[in-house]
Image (cartoon, rainbow, N blue to C red):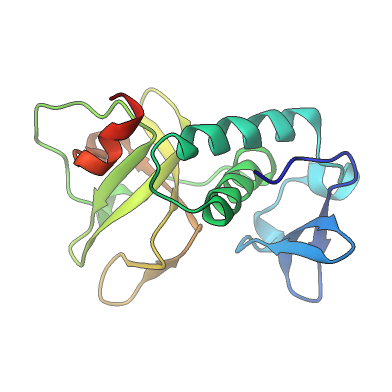
Amino acid sequence: MLQASKQWQWIACPKQNRLLLDLDDDMQLRTPYKLRQLTDCVFSNPRFSLEDAAFYEQVYNYLDGFNLYKPAQICQIALNATAVKFHLKPVLAKSWFFQEYTGNEPSVEAIIKLASKAQIGEFLIVEHCPDASICINLNENFKLDDNLSLEQFEVIRVLNNRVHPLLNQQYQSQTA
C-alpha cells in the first residue's frame, strides 16, 4: 500500500484542467475531475488532510480484502474515491440511464453493479445517502447510452433503487 504522507498535495492544474495529487518528486496522480467540478477547498487548502488519509486507507483496506485488484489499482481507486468524497461539488442524480433493481437481495457492499441499456458495469459507492448514492465507475469505459459514456473513475449519482448487488464468488472472499 502506498502510505499517505503529509507532503502529498492536491493540485488544481489549469494547464490540464484536472485535479492532480502530487505524491512526491517523481509521481503525480491525474484524476478525471475537471476544475469546474471542484470545491473551493482544493484551491484554498491543497494539503492531503488527515481526513483524506483516513478515508484513503479505509477504501484501500476494504478493496484489498476482496483479492480482486492489484495494489496499484487499489491505490488508484482509493485516491480517486478520496478526491470525490472531499473535493468534488455535489452532482445531480442521473438515474434515468440505469435500470431499476427488482431483485430481493439487498446490496450490502460498496462495490456494486449498475445496468444501463448499453451495458452492465462495476461501480464503487463513495457516499451513500438514504435516497441516492455517489458512485465512481470502475470500468475502463462505461456506456450510458448510444451517445454518452463514463471514463474510468468518473462520478455519477444514482437513486438507490438502481443499485444491483454484485453476487459473485470472487467477491465473497472478504467474508469467507
